[in-house]
Amino acid sequence: MGSDGTSDLTITRSDLPALLGAAGNASRVAKRNYHVWTGIDLSLLVVGTLLLSVEVSGGAQRSLTGLGAAICFVVSWFSTIVLLKAQYDKIWYGARAIAETVKSLSWRYMMCAEPFLAKMSAEDVDESLIAKLMSM
Image (cartoon, rainbow, N blue to C red):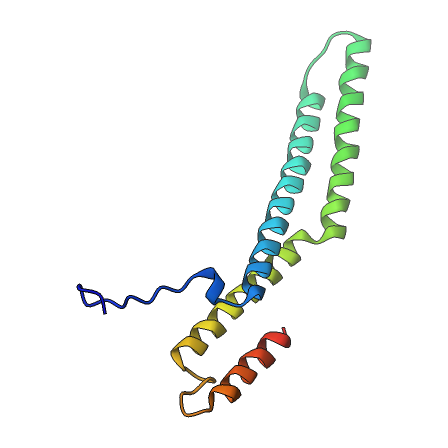
């Protein structure tokens, strides 16, 4: 115990299963990709809409703004397809769920909480944790 009555035990990343770090990294990458592609998609839709709403006097200028808007909408369509195919949102949420489950299991293991009871042998507790992590 520390002088203030708190425990001197500090849990670091190296004390936790590597799966927690891997899932956390996968979640962060997928989240970033999802936000980037969604931002691109929405920005292109806004720019395309603004180009169509601009009043221009000449026929050539009207053609250019129309072409610019069309390009924005086509590229936006492409980014929407990327978002649908890559499924960054599902990867993000799934990896986050795995990370939270690993964190919860790790805490239960360290505290000898259900299902890792203190009355079990150390080998049985270790095997149980490993089995649960392997089944993810």
